[in-house]
Length: 393
Picture 1 (cartoon, rainbow, N blue to C red):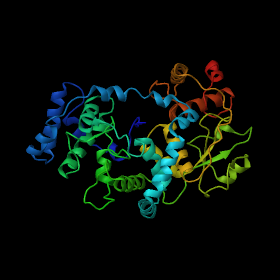
Picture 2 (picture 1 turned 45 degrees about the horizontal axis):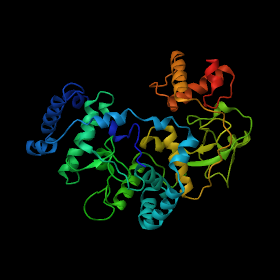
Picture 3 (picture 1 turned 180 degrees about the horizontal axis):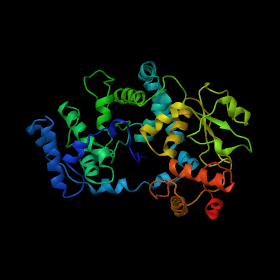
Picture 4 (picture 1 turned 135 degrees about the horizontal axis):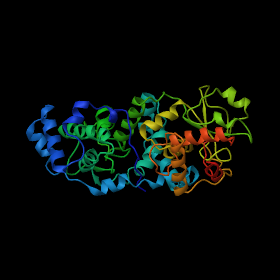
């Protein structure tokens, strides 16, 4: 199953200059936009002959825009989403790949401190271990998204990064394909991330993320390290919570010590606490649903992808691949439908909460607003929106 990121926000992707933005503003005639890109590339020192060849066949791709606006999968609750993405076959192949590339994973763990489970989870979810890497022309996708005025600051720099890869012999504007949002290879990295974090893992002198698993895994490990991964530290652990506690303390933005959580009745579901680091307690479907302890490394997942549900599922799958049991889904209160979620977001926005786009997706902003309103209304402040909350609003 092909699965692409909703925002693709990484640190390097957000680095751009005001002068670059002004050189080829978004919108307008597509041909004029491409002419502006060509002129800018030449002014930045690239040869006119190279620039001409690079942009020669670029086309606007309406399928890219359609995919960008169709992210309904993120409206699923955590349990449904996890069961959809984590199959017995995906587990089996993950374990098989862990054995096959054991030496590479050992290198990644020694050099970058990133667990093989984490890389296996991203490899599985992004491209099904390399089987489905996307068939969108990457240059067309990047230029189309840069021309579109929704997020030009994110995608414009990637065009010039791809140009540098082309000059290095690692990008073919006519044949390089990947995800609709411009990510390339087995672990789906944007061109600038490849420039910054690409590693020649197989020693052939090139970084081939589409065809070389060693290159992809080493590059993914370096990128996570670059994004702030703490070497050798855990990221997520399932816990049990009591029937009653101060639920307002839960959520990704609140951290307490393990002793503080233990005083409230929180316990690891299996084994012991993995470390003495600060911990956040995440309740993806409220206080009656599954519960997880999130360590500092868990926040690095959000630098790779911005979807709360995706990140939690990836983090949980990574623990499964390293020996954790299947999570206890428990019996959460029913969630809201997509239309109800949009209604809730509109009501929250009218009350002054920043929920972002009214899209029916329970993201971090909406969760925070829900928890604030639950506190105000005297409801269990677990950040899980229910029909009861919607009615009270």
